[in-house]
Length: 459
Image (tube, rainbow, N blue to C red):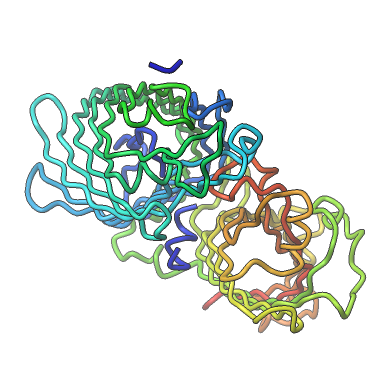
């Protein structure tokens, strides 16, 4: 043995590695949002790759039925006591890392967006689960079925879930990731047909709550790969070891937010909404440079955009600081100056606002910073030109960052009628986060737009 629909693609920016369930203590309460990140380490079975790493900032949401858990989103319901069904979409991490092309020249394989369903039944010693998945982007064009036992032990601040799983993948999946078609064969890399495979995994997920709002997670798993994978000329190992480290900060954990969320009249759901209309232009340069307003010149050759955002305040504090947190979603229209068709971009993010400046009692001033995910129906052509200078490919899905300053219009013009509105400047930024994640095709680079906006509270 050898040693997306646009909305779904935006929300799913999970993994073929054993997936950790967030503990009930971590997600109790409807309408709860969280931010955080996941770092993944994997001993890759591919020739020459060694250790694969992946870092991804993420968003999380737990509703009554709908949930967003990093790169997985779904709808979970209880059919009857002890039995649940879950319909989901998730990103499958897989394929060849962009840094691997020297070892497997001329071939490239990508992760994909899969949709599936899980049926779970509680038993005295844990839970049994059966899951089916299928490719939605027709990359591997196959499907998989896995059966899993998962134990559940928890205390006031911790939760431990050991698991054992068997996953069947059909031949289409394995031919895409581990096969060698005739046109890709070389004297050193013979043609190879990979068949269906059954892989076995064992591992554990652990969570610990630190204080009120902080969650730390660790996952470890060992997978024995099927012989059809081990025999592939693309691999040099018949097993895989995965580790995952997670951090989450939960909103709605402040006393003010908890009281509001439990209000009998649900007034919390009706208040705190804001809309924003913005327009601006693409600008070459880096994000930090633009923060200091060092790159404001307008070039009529640059592309333009307009956007509309709707946001909801979800907390009055972040990390114990007086920062308002808002969940926001936006629709952006790009105008490409004839270089390609105009197109839409879709954004979901969490944004914080700080307004405790010494002069804010005279003219309320806010500085804001947000992050989330951006999906563009087409890659903006100026972004694509810049990215392809140093990358093998670009990506329609990238990290979204938003940095802004605004002032209260009513304070500025001394009129009560406009004190619910703010006017300001923001940077609309798409980022590959320095090529650190497969979700963004390992893109190193991105794009920036200077924008000016009006934002008003809905009264």
